[in-house]
Length: 288
Image 1: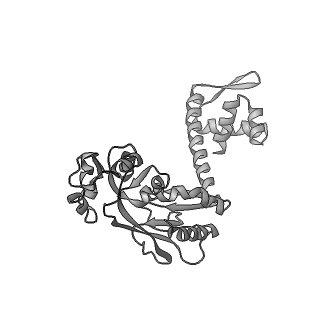
Image 2: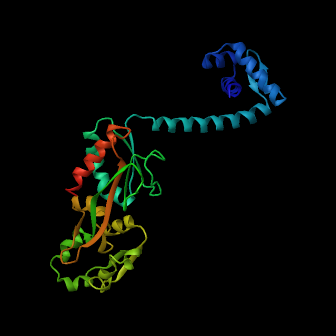
Image 3: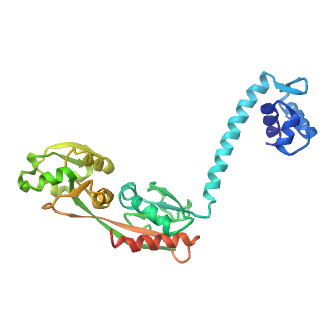
């Protein structure tokens, strides 16, 4: 690596002396590095031109590979530096919950905990605290890993919603005539899931299906775009409801949804910020 660093600097700067200044070594040290590298490769890499140097064909080929490799190494070191930030807290959370309920709280969370640098991941395969540098997880069941504090902190529900403009229009229409004024967009798994299938067989059966999605965030987007009404998780819709973009339609049942669990290391975590975040989330969960 030392030989390649001397070679890269000399090739880029076209001068052994300037390369030595950049690397904080003597010019003779750079010359020696280049000599050793050329001996290992078995051919020269430079042409001497006046007081400087130019790469030959072999040198040009090697420089391209070295600079690509140095770029990759620099990128990796930069990523490692990010993980060494003292304010870093890694939280794994399902994307719908992060999108609808947690995202609106991040700014307030950082205001309350100065220096907090959160890293949010939606990779739900990360099911072990600390094993892959995870501090907090939110999931639909306990991890049941030894040494963890695990508590149920949010209970979701399924609600029928529509775009605010559409909801205002439907408010003056009898419930049994709603299907004459709008269509239905739905989540594929909701049509067969025990928790939600009943509402599609009864209260929503008369509606014409406009589209079916396999991602609940796209379902919310369809509601916002006035594609129709939908039955979706309350916590996903939380921010859109708070901003008045959509509204819960009265008269339709609200169905039990997921119970979300929060998990972290029991006792003193590696950072006080981890405990502070958990305390904040647990305290705020009551006002979901």
